Length: 203
DNA sequence: CAATGCGCACCCG
DNA sequence: CGGGTGCGCATTG
Image (cartoon, rainbow, N blue to C red; front, side, top):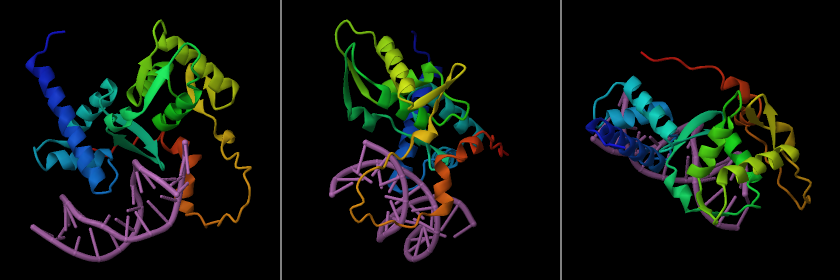
């Protein structure tokens, strides 16, 4: 793996992107593509298309997490989350992390096993016990997630099972039922297909 | 005008 | 509860 100066730029890009995300998050704003573009653009003048492209590369490389939240995509620095250590042995059940991965990836057609694998590894500090094959453990965990209806399988793509939400059979100890904001409420289900709409509004 | 700051409602574990 | 998130609006340059 020889490092050319071209690849150095992608590392630099990754830094800029992560800086931008940190900055935006500090401002309590959503690290969307547009905001990241303008945050970077304000320092080094680049075209949005270039920034978006580099951002996608960083996502593919796992340097940046693309998550689905409240009906839109956000980007996160994966490193703060890596504080979470997960010991993985042959019998470890990762089905919860699997469903979390599928949900947060938010891919409307479903996510591949590979995507899930990447996400789980990027968003956690996985500590493999000796003689343990992570991929195998993950495969079993996916199976468990399917059996417990956390996720569903369509072809080769895994999707989150929406009908599984709210097993809130808890006690009614004076729960203040707050009126929900209707516009935000949409996010969890019906938005799934909205995400499919490609928002091509480049200049 | 765009960029930034921030209170607080919301969500999820 | 506790911590993360980001809308909506105020403030600043």
